[in-house]
Image (cartoon, rainbow, N blue to C red; front, top):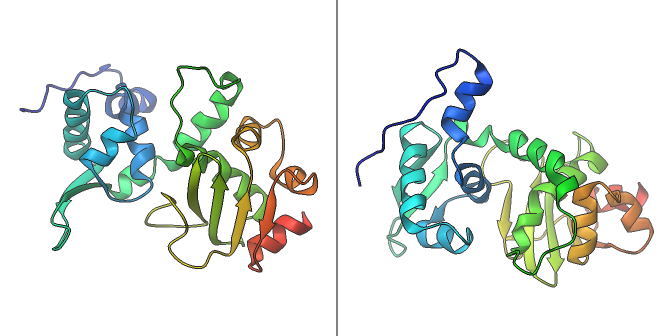
Length: 216
């Protein structure tokens, strides 16, 4: 598939230039998925329900061309190609977090047609953890929902900021909560510390983050 011709707003404006790169449908959601680290094409397609294979391939090519993502081959025994964000692409993390904060009011109750993945709660929860822990607290947090487990890396300055499944190492804190509470925290209807005090979030662990959550 040959790269498509880029469409531009042709405006000398930084917002317009940014939208030239990430304003296409699906691009920012691909970034959301790649913030978890290197992903295979098949995994991206599975976690982006509704995207066609042609559109996903086109967006990934655009992101490679624009310096937001790279494609590389894993060494044996994996031997699969994966996509991952560049440093420039990773700079979109606060953009996605701000967009999520702005859009939280539109979330409402889950609709029957809404797909859901546990790790889609990672970025809003990461923002809430950062607010509780402050800039001095870093750590690995494992989160358990009925929909599945994921983990987040609070204060990470490079590499993945979250991942699907249990934490790859002993976490500094474990949180157990339901999706409704997680969504309420993301919408700003409940603070994370408040939810812990009310018993809606169970916190275990002895790391600085666990202590900060229990003491907030």
